[in-house]
Each structure stands twice: as structure tokens, then as C-alpha cells.
Length: 264
Image (cartoon, rainbow, N blue to C red):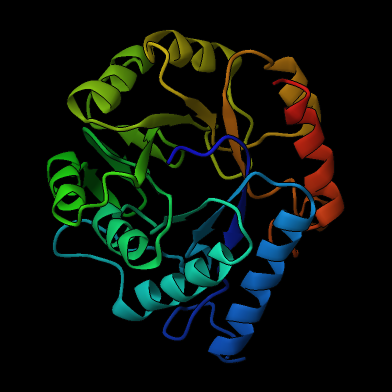
């Protein structure tokens, strides 16, 4: 299913084997993640997405470079536990592992996945990443998981298309030939605001398909972008003090959820 409203992000801390791992143990990772998920639910968030954000630097996530098995397992544990909160739950296997994300979703009854490069080819900090729409849509069908929505980024942050590509074409490629269920528009980096003109171009090209904001949304920016998006994935602003590494603050979730609800 395609989520609506405020999709709060649960960022997993660094896991064993990651450069940033603090040695506190896997249970500490789970406890922090589920505390964030509960705060999103308590604050009135509409959905949750779980990411292996602490596992930077990320692998490409494409064929021959999938995320490590223990990262997939940890994501599955958290996604399954988050489902008990009663909200739609999705998963994003950074940097770009849609295949593993679909496998996790099918195994945990999750509702959607996010993939940064679904169609085309982009130069990223992981090197050149090519979209795997042909593989991921066939894998979803093979799993009988057509109910798992694919949310695909358009001109995603921390990346540049390998050749010149305008937003309208990128949007049509993701939704049309790529078969994505919805598209996501981001700023240039994590927490960076979305350019209104870019969002408008994507909205026009999407032909009625859902358009998500994928970075940098705040209550003030939500008001300024009214009518240009259907839902928002928010990780930074809902943290305590708006600090990326802090825990999720239920009060900030409530404030942003109320702002987005006013757009309905």
C-alpha cells in the first residue's frame, strides 16, 4: 500500500561490522529503533519507514553488492516489531537494495519500500548505481507481494544522473517504464529542503500518481508547498531539537502531523 500523510523515519544505529558501531550490542540498536517507532506512533504519524542509516558508508545495494545479511536481518526484526504499532511500515535498504527490501517486506508483512535509483543510472558517493526496475518488479511478482508499494526517488539527493536528465522525464521513466507506484522528491542532501519548482515539475509529470517530499520538510515549508505533494518522509525535523542523531520527539511529530493534516 502507498502511505499517506507523515511517514516518520526510524534510523537504525550503526550495527556490528559498521565503522560507527559503538559496541553496545544489537539489543541496544533495537531498543533505540523501537523507541523512535513508538514516538512516531504516539505523535500521530501516519506511517513508519525503517532505514539502515547508521551503516554508512553504504554498499551500492545492486547485483553483486547487496547489503550484508545481518543488516537485512536487523531491519526485518525492527520492521516486524514496528508493525505491531498498527501503522503502515516500510523499509529502505541503503544505498539502493530494492531486492533485499522487497524480501524483507514480504517476510514481515510490510507495506512499502523506498528505492533511491529505480530507473536510469546515477553517479553517487558509492560510484555509479544503475536502477534495477526490471529485476525488482519481477521479484515482487514472484513473491506474490504486489501489495508492497515501490516508492522511487526522482533525481535523488547525494547523486547526479549519468547524463543530463530533466525532472519531468525522470518522473515519467520511474512511473511509466519503471513501474514505480509513487515518486519522491528530495533536496540536495539529507535534511535539505526541496526546491518548489522541482516539486512542481514532478507533480505535473506524475499524472496523478502520489508525490512525496523526501527531505527537509518542516511545518513552515509544508505551508509554503501546500498542494504540491501528497505525503512526506521526514527523518531530521522530528528528532529532538531537529538534530539528526537525536531520538525522535513525539511532540515534534505531533506538530508536523497536524500541519500536514491541515492540508487534507
